[in-house]
Length: 186
Length: 127
Image (tube, rainbow over all chains, first blue to last red; front, side, top):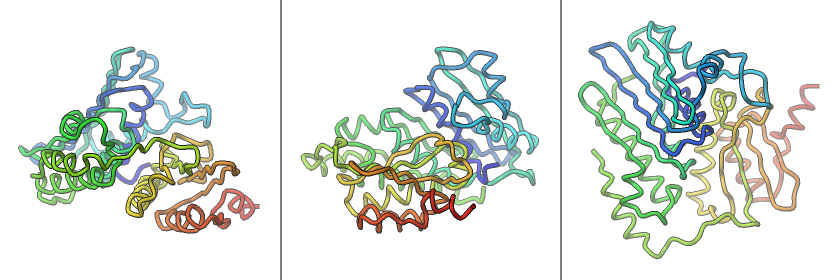
């Protein structure tokens, strides 16, 4: 199992990268009143057939040739369902995939959210040809990082991996998370 | 809240300063395995430590840090592969941010392979 929800998010979003997505939208919504954390990862990649959607939830199925197990999606599903939450995948060939996991916020078996800012940073900086829209919500408050908006402001000739830019991205994610959730231990 | 508008200032500051950072033939390629096995074993902080250090020390022209999928040696993750032009690939296993920075200092900058962290050393120890 992964030690943090944010590592599951990184792992499952890497599937979207490999599905050839040009846009990946990630939403993390922490709702103390509803006692839930909802994670949605949506991409416009190659999508899957109904049969493949069933197969990716099976730990002993993978399309890889390097090993015989595929644990990413089963880990995420198990982590959510073991907290009284839910898990679903909607996918359509040629259109894309939506993965949604709901966790019981106060459930004793829920792993911590962990360093979600670092997950988003890694995805954005190391996949510069893909656009990301990341939304973090805590109760009524929220902030968004939209790389399309960033490219608009920055121009297309400056890479996100330039030190000045990557430091900004890191600070943006960390500062705004803190202002959104007030440093809550999630 | 921090605003994306700050990027305008960064753009203005960097105007004309941005060189072409295309991958060149002499660049050392450092690849971190970031599939489920790598991520579960701690590859994310290893990747971040390497890329932060490369940026901080202004080494981006000499060293490129990228990620890859499953290398097929899951039990040895986190794995960092070093590909230097004209040299044999070196596979470092069971990396941590600290070990990765040691590899950066001794191998990538100093030119000496850190034998104790390599795959062959791990395989010999297992025998």
